[in-house]
Image 1: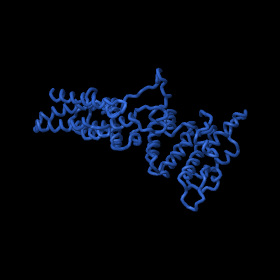
Image 2: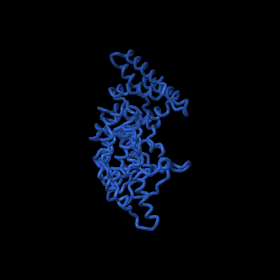
Image 3: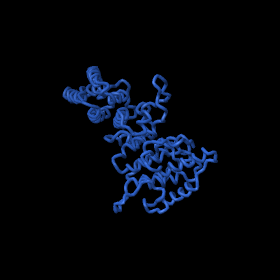
Image 4: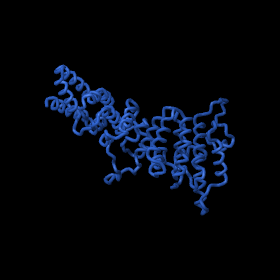
Length: 393
């Protein structure tokens, strides 16, 4: 396991004492610096045993753990323990399970849970499906208690593979799990797991990243798992991008490491999320791929209009479709555009008309981007022209 020095970060500086997992890593490194064989002191070893005694017990009920807590209990007479104290209890017990029998420190700053699971997948100690199943199961935990139960089964696997974890970060994530911060935590796990963490590109140099093709380009309608994959993507409809664990294996968005680790919600991620959910709705029931390069929404709507003109309702149906498409073109922002597309795509599905999802993702990404003030106007003009060309063909 790779070890690094503990940085004197802002969180550590604002506390009077390091968290126990930070102390343990510092203790091990100190013995190496003075020329001794790297090992944990008796103080650390004794307290690691105390941490394992607290596994499965409620916070505050394991007397042997009291000396390793760093979150101070308020002297207010209330019986309810602070969220930070409860989160620290669980973080300590998980650290105890992880560090048990490991010869090097397992607290590794900068390695989030998603990144650790990515390393576990690459270690080939488990199959890719097995790793994803464990991560997704943890991410869909309904409350902190359930999440900790899943993590208690996951961290020993990380130990066996020699993979560390940032326990200070995990402590913060457990603290906010039952609150509004959960979505940001989920997004950071998903982004860490789906992004390789390759260093950010140097201006003027090569990024050094092997980009993966978007899911809609590689989808095989004949694969046995296709139906389940599309169902997983449809489950993200109307939900916050990056927070739907079932969708994580199908994301290809890359972003700067700082944004990824913070779980930032970027335009790129939001656009890909919406495009994936639309494609899943569009593709279902079809045995050929519904991503068709060059088919803009205007072209697709024009082809629908042509089919409608040939039907029993004739011009009336064509006019109705034209009005509906016109409303889509007037979308004020990407959210409104996505809303209209969600009602438009089922029509394409019924008629078997394809759509260019690369183009659609670009439109969703740039429609209301303040750095591209003319983007929406350009799309409206091109799609309107495409509509009339396809409808009259």
